[in-house]
Each structure stands twice: as C-alpha cells, then as structure tokens.
Length: 467
Image (cartoon, rainbow, N blue to C red; front, side):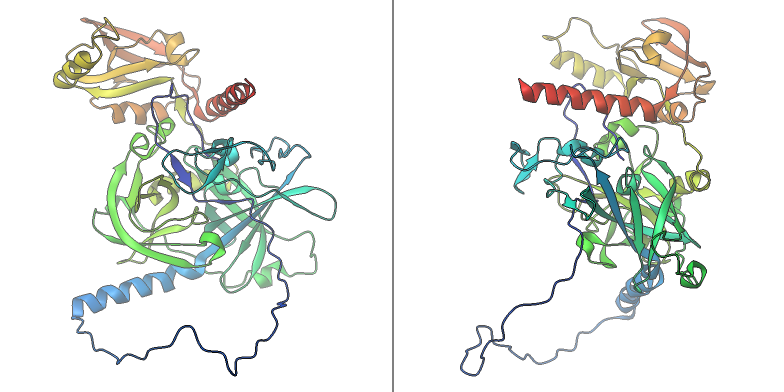
C-alpha cells in the first residue's frame, strides 16, 4: 500500500498507481449473437490491398529491433498476472487488512481537476492508499456465501523458483492472491513480506487448499525465472521496455527510453518517501495493471526496475523502482522480516543565498522572519508531535552533520535519516543563526507513522464531507 504524508496542502502532484481495482470476477459466458444473413449485405469497410513495400533497414537498426524482440522473449515468460481477492464486510471494509472502503452506488462524486476522465470517488485517494485520481470502482461482487469480494489485478515477476516480486500496493490487504503464467498455469500465492515505503512485496507459491489433488512440485517444474540487472549502470536515453498485464492483457509490451534517473520522490509527487529511494523515469507506457511488472533494459534483456506509478495529467511520464533498491530488501522480505525506515518529521531543502533572497522577497508580506542567506541544508518545517520537535530542531536551522556524517545537500540528509537505527539517539549538528548547536533526536519508524497520518487524514476528510 502506498502512503500519503501530511503536506499542509502545499500542492503535491497527483500520482496514479497502476493496480486495477475492484474489477469484476472473470467469468466466461456463451455467445448469444444470432447468425446474420450476409448474402445481400454490403460491407461497410472494404479491405484495400496495398503492394508490399521494401524498407531499407541498415544493420544497426535491424539489430536494435531484434534486441527488443529478444528482450521480451527472454523476460516475458517470467512476467505473471497477479490477481487478488479481498473479502469485505457489509460496510465495504476489509476487516482492517489495509484496503480502504469501496464506494457505494449513489454516493456523491467529485471531478478531479484537469483529468477529464470522468467522475472519481470522494475517497479514491485512500482506496488501496492511492493518491487522488483512481476512477471509481464498480460495486464489489457477491460470492455464494453472501460475502462481498473486491477483485484486483496487477503484474509480477518470477525471480526465483516459487518466489515472485510485485508492488506492495497490488497485494496489500488481499485475502487471497493468485498468479497466472503466460503458459496458462495458475497458482495460489501468499505474501511473505512487504515494504510499503519502497512499495515492494515478495510472494511465494503455495498449494491451493481448494484443490489438494494437485501435485504442486510437478506443476512448478521448469518455472521461468527472470534475470535481474544493475540499475546503477543505466543511462538516460537507453531503450527500455515495460512488460505487464494492463487491463488483463497479459504480456503486453511497450517500448520507450530512460527519460531521467534519480528522480527524487518530491519530483515524482510522493514527498513522504524522501531519502528512501530515487525513481527511474521512462516514457514507456505504464497503465493500470502494469504495477509490479518489469522495466527491462533492451540491450541486455535484464530487469532494471519495477513499474509502479505515473504522473497524472502528463503523457509519457512513468516511474519505476530501481532494481538495486529492491535487491537491498528482497532477502529480508522473503524471510518475513520487517523493514524499517527512519523518520524525524522535518522537511529540508538545499539552500543558497540567491534562493534565500528570492524567497524572502516573495514572502515579505506574509512573514517578518527572513531565511538566512547562506549555503547548506535548511529545515523548512518541523511537524507537530514529531521526533524532531521533541529533540529541539527548529525551522530555519541549517543542518551540517547527522550521525557523524557531513551533510551538503538535502538528499544526503534524507538518506542518513532513512538508514538510522529506530529508537536510538541520533546526533545532529545545526547552525541556528550564527551559533552551532548539537541536538539528540530519536528516529521513529516511518511506516506506522504514515499509517496514522493516513487514518487521521481520512477522518478529517469525512468530517468535512458531513459539514
């Protein structure tokens, strides 16, 4: 599940995560279309035969086109469709397992500004903990026992025999998870572990309780396994292909280039993940259902990222989690270990005298206090009831050192904080006006803090709706 930090309404971007939510359960139905008499029927569209043209393709272009095809053939069989079932209670809740309520028919809807795709539900930003802009889901289906079931869908990658990588927001809160291979094999899977901050989950194929006669080992024989690459070696302009199951269209392939590297979460529109990871930007098309699928380096045929989200209202702007970041947590997740991320409760930015003078000029009528005109990492805001506030950090403090490590840019500070030991005092040196002081702060784990922020935000939103 993805997270939303309290931003004080400072204009965060919309971010859409590519999980198909609440799709009706697939059930084949026989065709009832009557046969038509075509003897005297005139074709509305005529097939026009055109002469076959010979296109001159030089060796370099032919090799490039062949690389795309080979990359898809190499990785495609290991890309699976991930299907989820979430059993809901009568109120549309999932019993506290992490999914938000499903919109009921007849409830007031709101239009998301600038999207143009129709109505969206009022609590769409919290369905699966996704930002504003996910279309309203259809009412959940009823199974034979009278329970409401919310169906979801995404993509995944087989990375070891029986183990599958996907996005956490695809499977978090699900009652049952199934994976479907391109060769038709279908398995039940259980979540071994997840990191909702990085947005990665590890699934393991398990026997299906409903069909005990199935020989799981025999069915799992010769499972295709994807090869993982090195995302640190990627360069802007390299060709990549995104593979997944958007809208249930299995093994769909789209091609593009690496449009940007080390896109910080604030640029992407997920500022609560500052310091946790930087994203790969690509113009390869990523749609709902692509979440959890691979971003593949065309030249090597290896996976360099996991597709996760797009920027709303921007064509050709998609983002993937670098595979090297995933490799840093996947072993612990496969063993069911909890991944921690340090949290202090501050917003920081890299400041310089020119930028300080600019901000002071545009804010002179709003605040009498001026930003110090100096180089360094400045604390823009300290959140209430946060470790930073309790430790004594203040707005406009300039951070020079954290845990003995010199800090030159805001990204340096975010990385050190993310890796800090939870509950242990962290020494932070700051310049306050012209005096250097040292404060001791005890970092908290970011995940439960964000969960509480989401719940509080949802309560405030519901209370405003009632007014």
